[in-house]
Length: 396
Image (tube, rainbow, N blue to C red; front, top):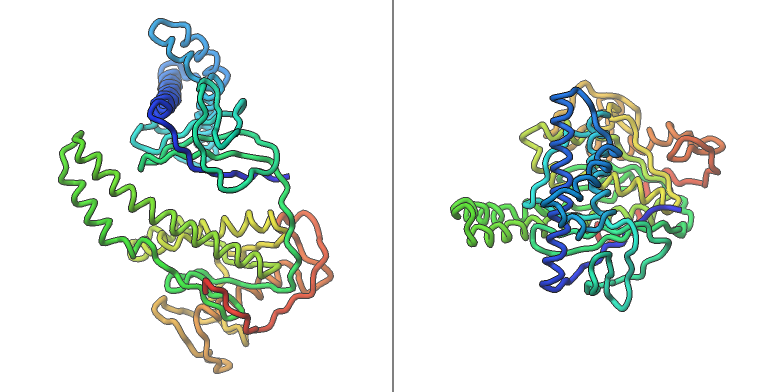
């Protein structure tokens, strides 16, 4: 059983939008208030509060004068906000994130409804709301529902994400193993010779986005015209994000469908973004998101996804004789091996080395191969390791 989310568009009425706005505001109020309480308690008394302290204080807060309106909000939704605050603190203590910050209504709004929601007659029914919200359910929901999240984007669109526990049918086993080298000119260069173009969605819209942002900077703060222009900028950013995400999902699914084992480099994208000359292009390519999709889809569909050590010199090593160059500037895209005289394409050579290094690490040439979790040995299929001329995909 795995957890999978199903996201659908919502079309609330004006009264329902007002109701949801109150829900968003209450969740934001509770989060910010108890974040401030935790900070004050630690500064004044050197005491750290936890979720249970906050939940007790929330119950007492509801009974105070001026806070009766909190009874109009789903209690489990408010408790979920306190859970989010607790998770934010835990992430900070474990050095996975920065210290929690106060939430703003200018950012994306979201509420969690853990229980007592349902979809009937193309409408979503949630607690405290009598009428159902119209939903565009474009695909069936499978599995047992766990919770739902209602969100509002900066372009004033409403969505619901239904989290379910479900089983996913495993794909038919393949005999192919592929190494992939991620780049900027080509998003992916694979060890079988295929190259996937990088559409550079941000670069395509960069001039238009810059123009709309200049117009936004000229609008008076707090005016209706500024709010309208803010939405224009948000629409462009949303279009870029949606286009990139759709493309990455298609690429990752293509790799999962066609290969049994996918091997890639373990990239430190955050550190690479510190290079101001390449940061914009690296962010536009979204390598981290592509690797994340390959990892969880491999677990879903019974594939093996492996990442080699990020310090392995895949580009500087000749795949034919294993000679390693002392230096290979980024501008050099092709080079001749001083030892065996083979002419190497930088990206294709790197993809072959990544594949061979992954094969060695996973011990695929032996009697079995390690699974992605490295906790069990599974039967190894007969894998084709040579260069092949595979039929290009429509996306290549």
